[in-house]
Image (tube, rainbow, N blue to C red; front, side):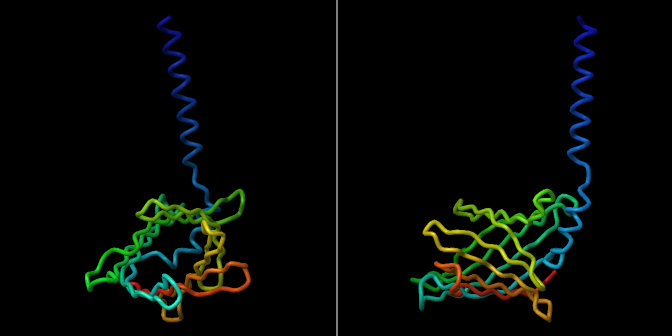
Length: 182
């Protein structure tokens, strides 16, 4: 009986080791596709504006930290931005987000999973565009929201956010300009 248990345990360990080894095998294609987004990696600092309702723009400043993780398999984007409260000059956190960019080798698609500090989450497809990328989602009211991130000729991060109720007419509600500091 002792021999049987030992043999079963050895067999289970061998199977689990083989599965773990296969699960960790490098996906060179997806890492090569992720390298197309390496231009974002770094620490960025700057600011911009957000329009909460037509005619009500609020300025903000902050940082975006973009890091390659898991040996280049994913890119982590963390944003922390501050703005003044509407009722005082006190600055507060107005945007705190974490995003993970990845490439699905089977579907041949980039994905962006994004979480806000308030618990909201979205999963979006990413499209690579000239000098950048674009991602978006449908909001709970049925409008489509999209963000376009590009590097300028100077190498700065320029991002705009737009919303559309019909998918044809877009209204800009957000703009951000960041400079690489590291």
